[in-house]
Length: 220
Image (cartoon, rainbow, N blue to C red):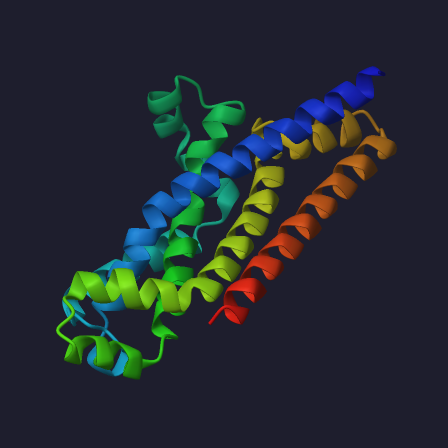
C-alpha cells in the first residue's frame, strides 16, 4: 500500500474518532441542557416547570456559545485542552473544543424537538398523576425521538465539518491531510480524495439517520 493511502486511512480514522467522541460528549452536555431549556420555558411554550429567569439565563449562555466561530473557539480552548489532555494539538486535544462547540447546538436541537410534542399528551400524563420526571422520561423523550434522531444526525454532520476545519490548526484528520499534504504541497489529488471521503461520510450518516427516524415514525 502506498504512503498516500496509509495517510488517507490514518486521517479517516482520526476524523471518525474525533466525530464519535465529540458527539458522545456533546450529547452528554447538550441533552440535559436542552431538556432544561424546554421544561423551564413558559407554559404557552409547553414548559412543564416554568422558570423564566433560569430559562432566560441558560438561553443567553447557549446563544453566546453558538455565536462563536469554531476556529476562534478552538483557539480560546487551547489552554483547557492542554489541562485535560496534556496537549493542545492533535486528535485527542481537538475533541475538547469540538464537544464544547457542538453542545449548545445539541441543546437547541433537543429543546426544539421536545417543544414539538403535542401538549395534549403531556396534559393527559399529568391528569393520570405522572410526576415531572415521569413526563420527561416516558412522554416527552419517547414522543420526540424521531426529531431527536434527526437532530443528532445533523449534529454529527456539523461535527464532520468542524473536524475538517480543525485540521487548519493542527487538529489532525482529513482536514489536516487536505491542508498539509494537499494544499501546501500542491497535491490536488490528495485534496480531492479528502473531500470525497468527507462527502461520503456525510451521505452515509444522513442516510442512516433518515432511516432510523423514519422507522421510529412508522412505529408510532
